[in-house]
Picture 1 (cartoon, rainbow, N blue to C red):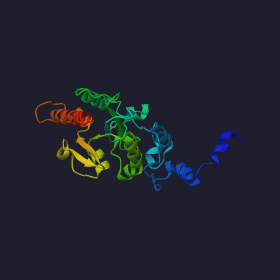
Picture 2: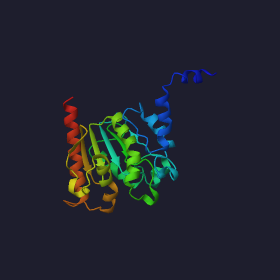
Picture 3: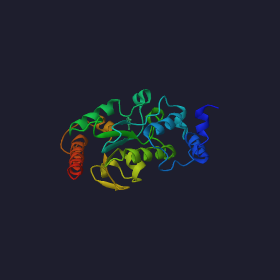
Picture 4: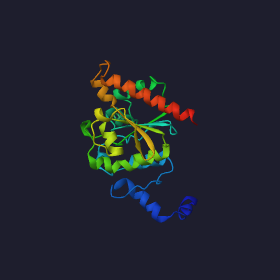
Length: 227
Ligand code: URA
């Protein structure tokens, strides 16, 4: 018997079996504390078939950025570029997101970790269904627990609804701080919405985003100055 097999005799069978089953059945809960690292979680996402999106993905898209970032950005779901690369927000809306962050000196190297409500690309970039969101959400909750951000930016209505359950439209709630599970969340426009609405006039979506990201910067500074 190899030493690895011998060592596996020490495994707690119930945990071991449950972990093996997690990726293939959305009925199996993923309890808080299931994963000790994002790498472990990503290994499950790579094999996951908790919803039918697992059948059509090229890559599961888990996250990118600083794993200890004070700010987490949550998007909707991967698009084509993300499905191809396995990284979130790398297409046009991702480039705009990086510019928005950079405008207040925030980078994915230091300050920001980026993830999505769904890890797999929905066909034709449609909005993920409630069943798909529910199947994938436990992974995101684990990511939030592990990264432990002070501030969460929810980009667009799908992210707001997925995390807080709030079904209001994004134009109604953007820019307002919400408290969720002891964390401060700011709903903001999705960058793809800004790509479709390029005006920077006062009151236009891009102008509002500029107000919101400055409020986020100020809140982070406040946290950092108090610690
Ligand atoms: N849109 C998203 O919501 N997430 C991505 O990763 C890319 C585009």
